[in-house]
Image (cartoon, rainbow, N blue to C red; front, side, top):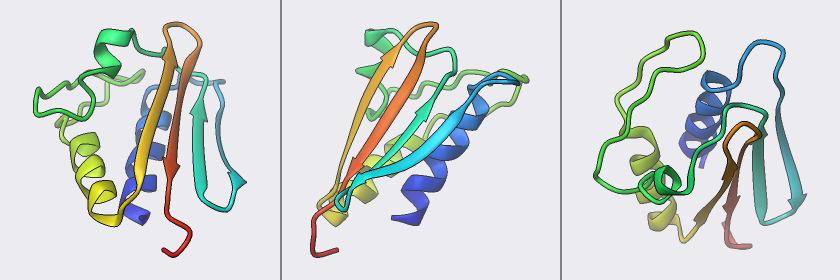
Length: 104
């Protein structure tokens, strides 16, 4: 589970500009929520996040990436019986929710 949370958290930091905000909370014992005030994503990008259609964009400070981190997160989550949900709005930010089974 640590890999999933670290990867999502690092992406939130990567895509949130200086002075922005990244929060992590646990609204209930089965969910971890990572929310950022970054640039957000359009729906067509969100729909491709967990596929093998590699999407790699530069971060707010020009950071590069491979584009496979979220795909690996999805595979790990599936192997654990967890789910990853994404809500994003361009210019507002993105929220990732990792929902886990109670017996993990």
